[in-house]
Length: 274
Image (cartoon, rainbow, N blue to C red):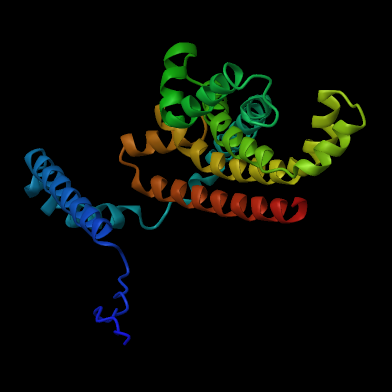
């Protein structure tokens, strides 16, 4: 006589979007974020003059009315500072790119000569450049070499090294290894392998990154004059200091037009080269 098993029937497991531990971690994360927000809000309230903030809309309306109409007769005086700003951005981008290319090849895993010494040093240069804003670079350089376009050019260049170097070394690491292995199998030297196997692959990315950085530097160079680094920013600072709001409006229109044109040019360059 055979006996049938009396084990309880198995029901399908209920599907959940996240396991319990993940849900608990998310709730704890949201709770910590809420606590951090409350702490920051309390600190902001302790150092904020709310009666002054309440008057901000009327002050903004008053300044806006003073800006209209823009003083278009001020435009001829802006041609030379605008040209200086464009030169600052262009020369700074060129210097940053020239410095970033060797740093990128030293930082990439597939081209660095040493993973223990050279690569960490190259990554440190990239991180140090990206962690300091161009305005801070300009402040330091103005204090060291004095005000003028040279400080602005060097500030743009030092800031561009990290941006271009990071994107370029990532493009180098993502290059297809098969052409590199094929060239190395012919007995080519390391420099020849890099020149014929990696450079052609990353060259389109290089031009695109350079054009994109030039577009960014056009925008950043317009404000470096606020700290004495030359360019149209010095005219903007002088107009604000003298409360010449109609001139400020003209300057803002010129800066806006310059940024729009530079973005259009950068997009056309990237489309043509990539």
